[in-house]
Amino acid sequence: MLLEFYGKECPHCVNMEPTVAKVEKATGLKFQKFEVWHNEENAQKLNTHDRGRCGGVPFYINTDTDKFICGEDSYEALKALAEGK
Image (cartoon, rainbow, N blue to C red):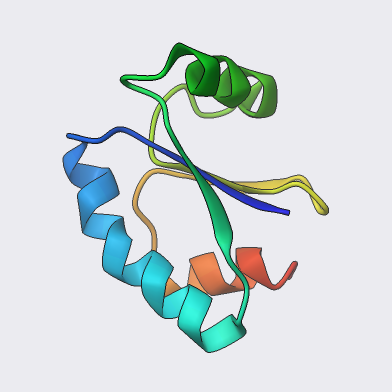
């Protein structure tokens, strides 16, 4: 399962939106998206998956591999995460 945690007004999250869309289109895989700045339940879910590794957004995790990305990253890195590489 691919999860994306973001903040609605987070500039880094906004910058990653096209990259996420490109990865989803290229792989056919979809990230489940959780806004955490205005939703306490989603913020708690972030803490459950983050476990102190990142401490902020954007945060991407492949729950099958437990690999994650903190912050902005490249298309290649996000695609590899999505594909479990």
